[in-house]
Amino acid sequence: MAIYPSNPNLPQGTNNTPVNPDNWNSLVNNINAIGLDLVDGRSDNQTFPGIPHTAGQSNDIGDMLNAIRHMIVTISGETNWYNDTGASLKSHDHSSGKGGVIPWSSIGINNRVIEMYPSYPGGVWTPSLHGGPPSGSNNLIRNTGQDVVSNIARNYYEVISSEATIQDYYIGLRFAIPENFGVWTTNNAIQVEYRTANESSANCGVDLVIYKSGNSNIITSNANNVSLNWSNINIPNSALGSWVPGDIMELYLKLKTRNNYYTRVGKIRFNFIS
Picture 1 (cartoon, one colour):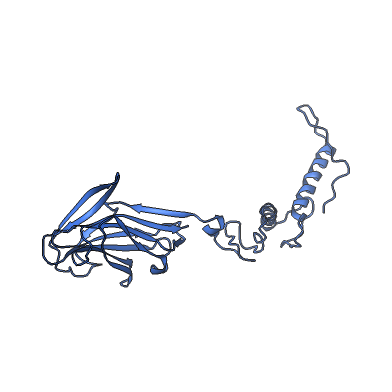
Picture 2 (cartoon, helix red, strand yellow):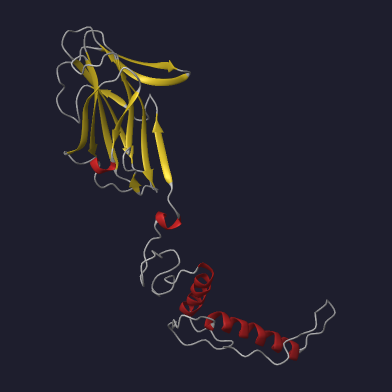
């Protein structure tokens, strides 16, 4: 521990106080001693790399960074900030003795929501699934509209057909996984709002198919959803596999109808934790 000068009490300076070498040197000695205490004042027996500090000495930038790390450790109570001298404050990852990007989880759980409403940004009508051939049963009318139930207005896409056999059409859209994405929520990672005019999937319904852009394999699908009231197709995180920021998710909503029964889809909601 540093030893402070024997006479540290200096008179308060004014605009007329003359420059005095003794006062100046005493002030410098006090500053150096305080700096030495900041570096040495630890109880964890951690040894910093480089030449040990003495009053008035700081030989390299690594020593200075370690002193800063030590002060942050003292304030935060976290003991791993300075174990890896090749790391930095930015690359701390809470694992013992090593660095890495600070995880979003280290600053608490943050639930995030992204919602898309018709007309979906980047959404298009398409007669086929992911570049495949049309089903050959696309004789229907495609609409957009708004349904107000209990003073809640929902925008929707709609298909309706008078044909006796089932007709269908797809809505395709691309969703970029955001930069603050961490993990999907457990039971409702993706929710798609829908409503049908009949409760039988032989007459109408909604299918959802998900791909990862650049891959021909289906990530997950959910078929034959029907409901007389507005309901949700819920996709759990367990069905989605691994995703990282920047990945592109390609979603296809297949709307099916016959005998003048409508099928509607509304809001799409993405739920994740950053």
